[in-house]
Length: 185
Image (tube, rainbow, N blue to C red; front, top):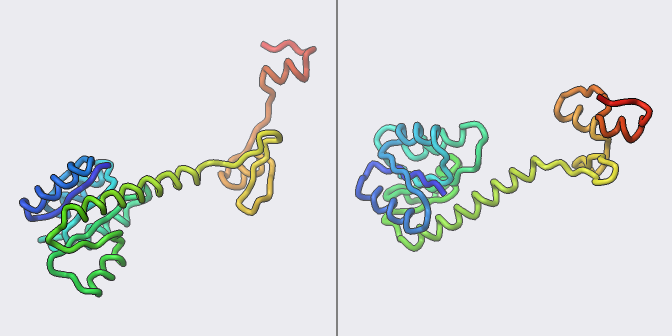
């Protein structure tokens, strides 16, 4: 997984980078929310680990900005704080779109466990997104099952959900099968 680490403290960023790599992931490190957003918009990022208190954009600002970007693969967001550790801060982080909330100093083993959880959630969420795009079709009559378990002809289904029209013709194989007297070119 690609992990974007955002912290204005270079020593702490280096520690997080080591943990991310030790957990088997690829790390990208930025020292500001602004730079991190530029990186996020141009690279595939699965997990973000972001400090709450930074000059300029805060970690909550970064989280809100990332959540506002149109749909792409799910990004798991971990917010870190050394000072904002009360219940209100936790709730603020969750309301901003964070998935996890950790306090500094970081316990290496706990962070590795959180990264494993983040990976499971990202993989499961992305797999579910892929499954949403599958269309359940009868292998015999080729009718499509809607969400209400009613089957309808493929043309009706596709026209309703995808706003397209069909034009009909006959493929060369069907001409041979159903109209053998017609020579197909």
